[in-house]
Length: 422
Image 1 (cartoon, rainbow, N blue to C red):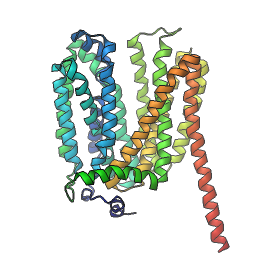
Image 2 (image 1 turned 60 degrees about the vertical axis):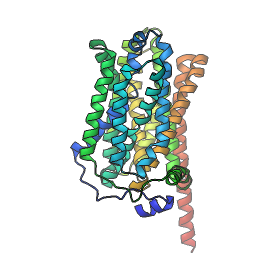
Image 3 (image 1 turned 90 degrees about the horizontal axis):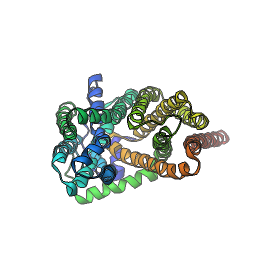
């Protein structure tokens, strides 16, 4: 289906697509770095919460609402702002989002208690710039390289989410917690300048009106109804991220127990093992370019299931636990990139921001469910039961994938039989 056909299906006049620019490796790496720095805004607060609380003469626990506000803002931004990338100039949209993030980051160190939670909410809202960059990168890439490009950009997201905590902790200890946010504001301005230089302009055919915006949001539901492959991949994404959040919610609880009795610094260092997920993103992208998304997804879900099952029984071994963390992160990211490559391939560039909204909303809902279920499972049976919950998420995704494959084979066989009879 042509891009024009896709745009007409929603009744929206999106940006005029210019000729696709040549996407060099340096451009892809800059987009990956920009994504990583935008996502990092969500996590700077977590490692410096004690320092911020002390400066405000409050307890760290009383500021956890600011952490939640950032996540709520991000969730709202996914639904309300990311779809705009299909209706307005993405470069202009990114300029607004990133400069607003820079301004918020610069103001946070001066804010009082009452304003702080709203500033973190706004920071989460505009940090969805990363999810505007991802479909932009997919649209700039030629089809035969799309998986590799998406994988590289998502590697930036993974590394940004991991390394920002290290950056924040080191800067807060060596300088001051305020310097973390001021430094992040400067980096946002650098991201803005970079994006303005490397992204093509995409002028919209007509100004976006309130009615047009309502149709834009309404088309999200039409997309779900008319694209069964996207629904399928949303289910895989939700289950995969559920397994991920089960792992990272339960691992700190396990490490404070015997035989480890780790403190917060050692637990934070274990989080660096998640960098293995970056390798999974790159490899999955390369396989996706060869049309092997289903094979990658099946292998990833099998690896999640087996790794959780093994570590459920053998978590007293640090080597086994560390290996499980690496393998599960690797598999979750591999499945995630296969999902994204598949859903981006279902639509033209003028709908990729909305596809991102639908997919990432389901993705985060799955993660929220995984976190919510971890508490009761931990309370009931500790680490063994919780790890089996992660294994169940992987197994459900694998069974779902095999079920879809069986239905497709049956439909194909039936069509072939009808053609033969005719």
